Amino acid sequence: MSIKITTDSTADLTPELLERYQIEVLPLTINLGDKGYRDGLEISRDDIFRHVDAGGDLPKTSAVSVAEFHDCFTRLSPLHEAVINVDIGSKMSACYQNACIAAEEFDNVYVIDSGSLSAGQGLVAVAGAIAAASGMEPRAVVEYMKDYAARVETTFTVDRLDYLCKGGRCSAVAAMGANLLRLKPCIEARDGALAVGKKYRGSFTKALCDYARDRIAGRDDLDLTMCCVAHPDAPREAVETVMDEIRSLAPFQEVVEVRCGSTVSSHCGPATVGIMFAHK
Image (cartoon, rainbow, N blue to C red; front, top):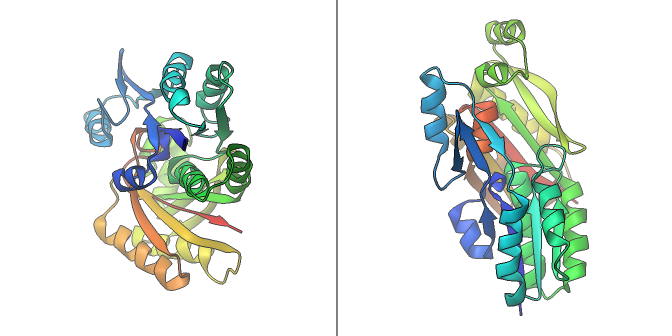
């Protein structure tokens, strides 16, 4: 019997990676007005951008419920030696807590707090699937995933600050000043929460190259298995340029482009690019 890896939709893994590693995704709920939609199934990032561009409020996200996790674990646990679920960081959502409650009834279900989001969370799921395929016992896979989660670096650089401003994460005055100075803030996952890091100046493409060099250049502690470049709908030239920059800085086995789903899109807007990888 196999070990099954599951995650919530904030992980932003590509369909190809989900298929390759047989990872199952549970969707969060995206609330627009008084209606809720299942992330990635009933609503897309483009729907969110159209809604906001038309003057609508930012959507709110709701965690995967205890009942939804319980239904998933009830279905999967008899079919596998173990089910290991990894979620968005527990300081950012109730997904992890809800999964833990649902898992209490199962002897072979384990829950991991990624401490991250987007492809940073996705990398933990992929690492678990690779470890499981190597023949590790379930508890060893769980411990490996916990260690790996602590080594994942998840950061984003944001071009447009209007979404952060609408969401109350920066003031209108700060956003105006940053726009006038052409500043692009870096958002970092630190200790399981999001914080503002370095601010980059200039065009978005230039800022992204500077950002990539700051994260990767000259390091000998990188896990070179995979690096993800995540974005909702950033300019094509900017995405390709930063991916080429990453390849020139470190010999990652894969540099994967990932399209962010509704969670990141709701909070940061379309012109956001993240770089995610693990260190040794």
